[in-house]
Image (cartoon, rainbow, N blue to C red; front, side):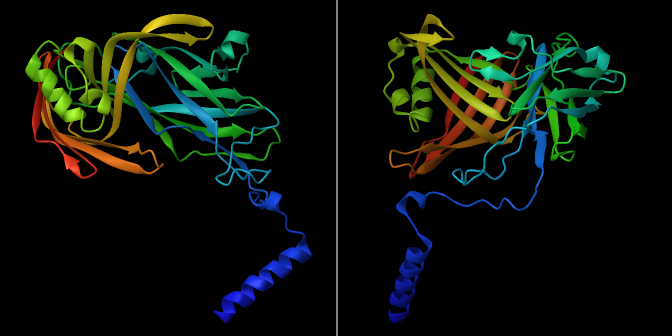
Length: 344
């Protein structure tokens, strides 16, 4: 006890000598002496969409670094002071051989605000791309945190009426940088993988028959476990229920008959109110027409803590119909094993 009192007094004494003040409580002095470079890298590891999608995109971003003000303890993005040029390459094609067969056009832009992009302001990022080699380059402007590159694709190349168990898609990576005197490096290790998802399998949007009382009650039993709004639903309140299987993600959407006014970019529209659930896949046999799946996520509680939920079970696709058998667990509660029948 004496040692604790001694060090407490000593700390108070040193604080007095050094001019400690309450206003400095939340300020951390950053280690500015080390001239670490900025890092440009790919924002995500991958994405995917259905066979008939006509475009996809990926983002190039600046990594977080030490906040010069010392206020953001986790670091922050510090934009560059000069433009730089980033080189990239499209490689590892699957399901096709010539990039020109799939990639038809390309553009680059960045977000100015929620309603405006650099394209709207006719700002050119000097994007170049050669489909014969897969190599391209793009200007990363000063003062910008991230840019997005979008490829227009041939929506008919992969769109068919059969289930494809083989992978289709491509890989993108950053391969170089013209730093223009900036203290900046490029991450050439990470890659972005784009996958073409087969809608003859489990991927895509499936609809639950709300007018079928058994299916509706089973949906409520399953997902009312994690959402009170679903738990209290009446069939007359609902316009549509859909379940979607996307790249790495599961979604359920309950579109209500009740509407609300929504303003977006200066335009006001009347839209249906929606209850949404989302989770990430822990497991899914997406190369088969039937198999196992598991998805999980956490829900923030009123006190700021988070509680995990998990749904696990199996699926079977037969043409335009999906049989989904799941058991849910949330906190100390769980459901029985419940089967849903959905259609496209």
